[in-house]
Image 1 (cartoon, rainbow, N blue to C red):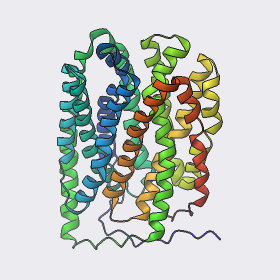
Image 2 (cartoon, rainbow, N blue to C red):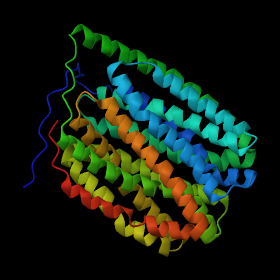
Image 3 (cartoon, rainbow, N blue to C red):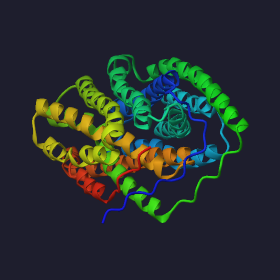
Image 4 (tube, one colour):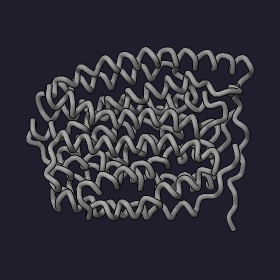
Length: 401
């Protein structure tokens, strides 16, 4: 018999009656800038491979350094700031991303590339939990919509990175990465204003009385979080494969140019942005469990077929994969936040951090497999990862918020 998740106590907060759309748009724009800057790193892997004579394993380790730095720090930052908010911490996080990007543009050896990737990961670790918490606070109860609007900025940024790499970094060289520091400064200014809004909101809540302690975490909630984590694993290992190695697959399999491979990567990442924006509002209407099921398990036929088709069909399949697969993460995140009221930063940090860690480890492992067995073999094995989507049937229907 399926038992519905028990409704947790209402979170004591001074939630706005209406969605703070200006704040959500600012956070989405900052997410766009943050992920644009971060996506420049994997987008220029072919450039770095040529400039430093790197193997697939070394490229995978750069991605590992970036992703795992973000992964390890995000939950701790989210937990700490749930208890002791630091309202302009995201400004410092964006500064770390800026420093890492400039360091990549000037790196003289492989070791500096790894250090720079870790700086970019630090920026992500600081930005995501805090910004996700503010997005929920500004939602006015439209949790799926707010997370989708916030995340679509990030996905749009991830899609923009390859375009900037194709049209700016490739013709002007690795040093041109430093030019994008202007975007980081714009985001820092916006985040300073968002921090002021969050601080004012916090002061109003404090005057209304001390917030009640978050309820203890039940074993059932932990079990559900583990299932959500496995679903996230399936999604982000596959995404790591496409994000890190799709350009190499296209170049090696079809003989396209680096610029063409970047444009086709943009097609995939643009589809990811569309899917992200659709997933949250649909989850608000029909239920997040249904969205997660269709998103992860429903993409299986396309991922299995991808390594066996031609160039045009591959571009079409990756577009469908991007739209369908991306719709899950907003639903997973909001589902998890509803399980642990009062711990929004922790849950956001856990899932963003786990996603980054899984992607980082996956990139390193898949890079080693590509060196040993070939890039096409990698795409064959990761095509079966969406089978893990059957675990959705173990999730209870989420409570109505």
